[in-house]
Image (tube, rainbow, N blue to C red; front, side):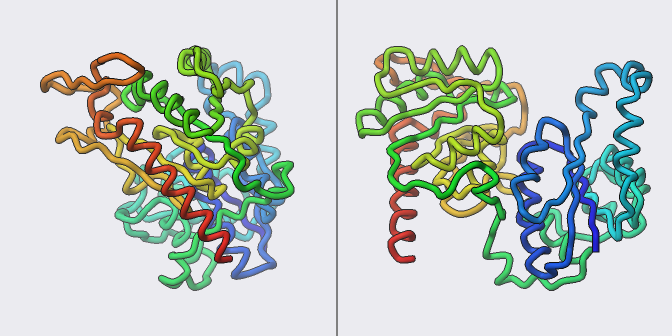
Length: 363
């Protein structure tokens, strides 16, 4: 049976789909999967051994110049590539109008979530069959349940308690994950301005970590992130700014680290998929339904009354909140992150790394 998965973006959403693929392949080893995904994330499905063909799509780039895309033939080439194979089933795991369109463009019976449980109800117009999955479950579990119903295999409560993203270390260019590397990775970059942990906190955290004997690595993916990484590392021995990494390169860095501390960002979900001990810092966003999920994961949520506001811009109107970090007093901005001072963050991460060491020893 050949199945097409349509889950195009974002990075976290793509990673959230991997455990469902593991479930399905375990239930039926004869299943073969192809996957339509945004070109920027095309590396991710290829890391799972159950995925045969990755079909890149470029909606994010195409929508910047629709006329050029149509005239240049790139969209036509994608459509032809999509129609090469007749699928027994096409699963729209995204639940958006654009993913619904892609699903219907393919050759096969198309399924997705029902209009009462989907992100964009109009997407259901493109489905041949729909399934209802409770909206109050984590995104990972919702996709797992969708796959189990669409592919007709049982998914018991005991199964849901176990999670396996199925990533093949060999496909990441690794033979095994090292223990006690002494390396921490700080994921300081994120999309919303309101999700940024204050820079003085990052510097204070870096000082605390290096004083404990760790080496700290700072990735970046844009010019602002490059500047922030260098500002965090400036003058602190044992802290280095990485060269710009591919997704596979970042996966290698995270897999070989002792631990990760990060804000609400897609790379945090990658750390969860690799089961690297990870502490994720949440301010304006709610981790309940789409937060980092898996083994050796912990999350700190803001205790500020206005959090989580789910806003890209901070609208806090209370008195300014100040703190001391990096040798000076500063105003915590966004203020919701005042709940997560650096010392608390490092202690929480070290608790996770200790738990992993104990679990490895027991195994």
